[in-house]
Image 1: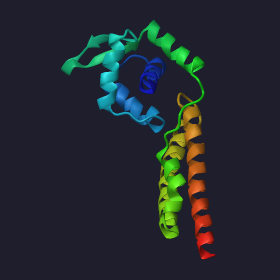
Image 2: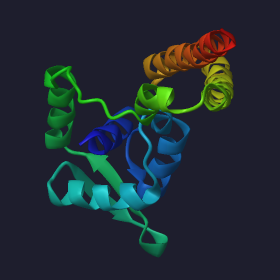
Image 3: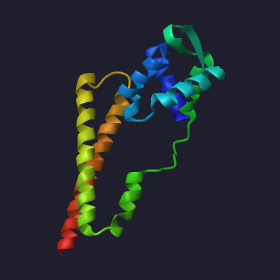
Image 4: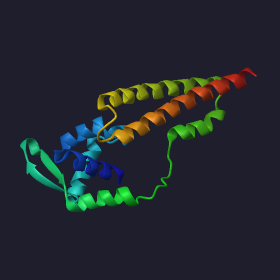
Length: 171
């Protein structure tokens, strides 16, 4: 359902687009929050067209189709935004790994956490660079701010937890 909402949102914010254009827009924006590749986007667009959420406009060279949100698609997106229940079941591999850290030797845990802190820092640098380009305004800004804050917290948690494990291991 979230891929569908992301596509409806992109079409609503940016106007009619082909599957290729949507994939490119997705990669440079929504993909930071919700990952999907063209192998998922194209079939979802076909389903959305069959369900009347988007229309297929002009068909160009090599079967290129332009999609536009219908009134029903706009209504579905709006309803999802304002009525979706806030509770979401969590399936977070990083959190599960954190839960199971005590099963490793301290030096293994520390090494894992240091690698994770570096990975979070690298992703954070990318989002902060994007923030500078966007100048803190425009479509996707709130999600970008959320991502930056989450990555800062995760980077800090990984580093501080590694420090605590090292300290405890020294005795």
